[in-house]
Length: 147
Length: 422
Image (cartoon, rainbow over the protein chains, first blue to last red):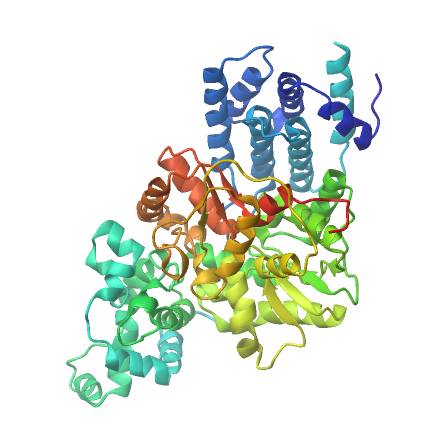
């Protein structure tokens, strides 16, 4: 299966089961994991990638990701450190992967957060905002679906 | 202007206008303002009594504008305000006051204590006794255009992100649009979902709107630090952008101070009326719904409650609109105790969240919000201010309460019926 645009990408994601959504979302977050040093996020992603996960493990992973997300907000009036903000969106991507299902498309949400993380990292590096995280995600999803 | 005590005292003298004089002369020292202040109620420390925070301003008032005070000063019985005193008062005037206005609401003689704190902050800032966090935010707001250092490229990146997420192109510098949207840096940096929600609702409502490349920032750090000259520059930037694009209405975002600064104080700051209207986003959305411009479907199943941002409800009068909108999406909506005009502040308004030294006190003061929330049994907290949202999330995390905090605009967009004409 080849995916090369957001329309097909979103459609493919929406057809996944909740467990597949979680695992795909975790892979999107993992692809930007290099942008954070927060060990809680790594642990959340590892949990979310498991084929099966207990409610207890999900709850723990959720709390880890939520705490990492809250800790990494840029507060009102503080100068934005775009590297740290990239870390915040990695946390948000991880959080999206294990959020309680609400009928939406959590894998798409995770993909969007991961793209924001990459954009923030580009701003921090002074390299504009253009990046190809979307193309990387198309590839990751295709590999996941083909595995 | 270079900070100095002389300039600060001079500014304080200028700040004492007729209302300030009447407030000081009519204060009956009843202490009711103390019971209304979250910093006093949560610490029990009398130094956090609102009227006590104004002591340096009162001293200047007495020494300069009362007969007995002048005699006392001449005879050396009343010492002038010093740098060390102002430095000592800095945490009282900034760290422990969110300008929430609850004290003003309960004053039996009608003193607007927040107005007095704001005037005192003018002198504190000019004399070099404002917190570093607010000084930095104000400098960035003037020099860069955002208190958090956000530049247009970051806004454009978010516009692109929203286009990817929703498929909707975000208009920029569209002259003649009906609405001009301004955002807080908090929304640009932390909450891209806000802009996406607006884009979807505007599309469904069939309204023309735009962002402005020269005036995308709504936050007014000048109001928070207490420097009217800065506040004026920041308001003027928005006015210039809106008038250049000839929009009919500027939409203030989910941010408390941005709304009061632009809508209620802006015309006085720039010395003339606007050529456009200013509405808070919730007023706009409530108006759209009343006109039948959008529909919603489905409801949030779990119990919701709403945190009223102080500047919105108490200082701004936006009370019914959020509740009208919540009725569209909430089956089980419960009010917090003291909801509405007497709601308790999140603890981070008035620039407090920008002051690192204030963090522990802020978390201590948050206990009242925690208690309010526990009483409701709500499973989700909705609010309409990005700063309140983060301050509350941090407070909840600190106290190990796991309640999601969401913005009202995006909650509404989650239930938007898209595609069909309403």
